[in-house]
Image (cartoon, rainbow, N blue to C red; front, side, top):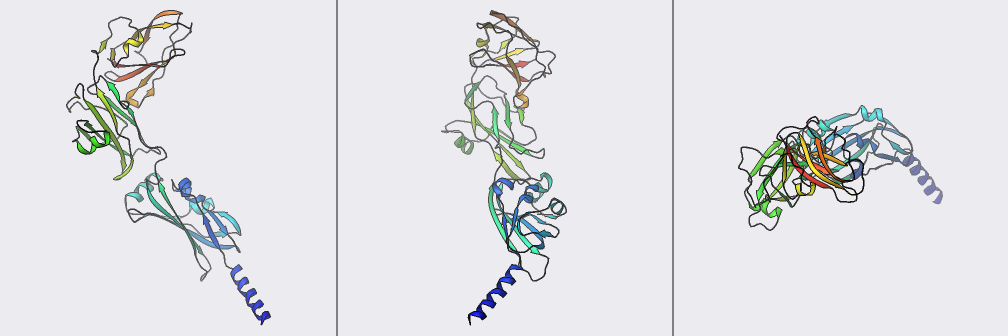
Length: 357
């Protein structure tokens, strides 16, 4: 009897060893952000080598829709750890879902934010052999969420038609649009409550850029009022990222400082004011440390705070300096707002907003 059982065991072992035993290993939080990264799946074959195809199905769970189905040509899966050959993945048949998620993936090759399942199936070429499947779930979000830039949160500004700018979510592509909403604080305790309860003063959709000059066809903002604003990025009707709610207050401590050939102390130009000039930035600067060159930059608010290039070099003497920065040939645009940022030695940076006219 023992001999019979022994031979039965050998037959079963031989039969099982002749059929592939496949396990897929995949980390969706790391590799499931774009289409090509699905090929990084590791295929563990714990038995004999076998030919077969890999089918990959990606599904968005909250919408209950199929996003894409990928079927590779047949290739040899050897014993041990395997990966999908590049030529096999490159020659795969792709069927994108007829929905917003499928369209975005087809267009950008990146998965929009969502709750996904990634299912990998080994389909053996030998008829009658079993298939092997493993599924992995993951919540995919932007690597870098959207971030508001200007006006700075809780800032006090003296611009009743300010420039509003933000950093888009990453990865970013040109088919992404933005929706901006701005409202008064009124009786709200915080920004999110104001956005929910108060009617928007400014509600703009289908914005293609990341910088917006407050529209001239809307009433200007009012002195002494606190405002809250928020931006939403979306694509094909899908929300990609939502910014935090930021606030700012419109309050002019003094009238705008007009360039009148005077050299006011740099720090006196700050204090919530803005400076209007057409040719030179003029100010006095006290150099107590015998620094040889002024360390400064000019930031383009209209381009999300991008530094302006080709700035002239400003030499310093020890003591009080009267500074003239020629800004006529550095590509500034009339009517636009910029920030002069000076870096005094061993002191915090000083920022002055100015309008180029």
